[in-house]
Image (cartoon, rainbow, N blue to C red; front, side, top):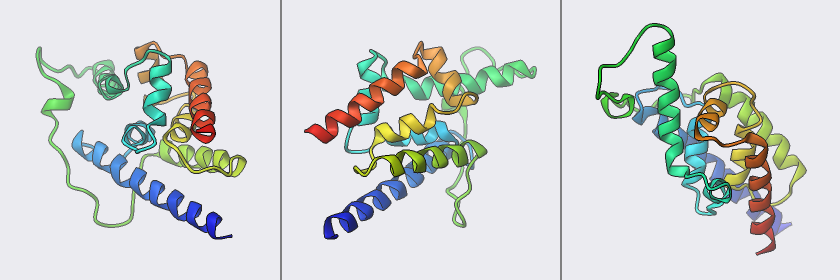
Length: 173
C-alpha cells in the first residue's frame, strides 16, 4: 500500500514537472499555450532519460526535435503567405511570453495527449516515464508533433517500438 502511494506521488510530481516544463518551452518560443510537441520536449528533460533514449534507438537526435518543431511553424506561416526574411529564425526572433499565472491552458493537442497518457498509465502500473509521453504524443495522426517527426525522418511506429523498449528496459533494470 505504501509503495503504491509513493508511486502515485512520483507520478503526480512527474506530471507537474511535465506541465511546468511544457509551458516553459511554449513560452520560450512565444506561445502562451503548450502543445503536445512541448510535452515531448519536456519529457526529454525528465531524469529517467527514456524519451531521449527512444529517439537515440532510431539514430535520431532528440536535440533536433525542437528545431523540427520550429520548422513546422515556419512552414505553416509560409503556407499562408508569410515568409521570414533570409537569416531570420522563428526560434531566435520570437519574444518569450510570460508564464500563465492562472489556470493551466493548453492547445487541444494536449487534451488528446493527456487522454492517451492516462490510457497508457492504466495499462501499466509502473512509474510514469518520458517514453510514456513520447508514446502518447505519437498517437496523434495530425499536428505539429507528427509533422516534426516526419521532417526528422522518424517513423512513428518505429518510435513507438523504441519507446516501448525503453520502458521495458527501465523496468528490468
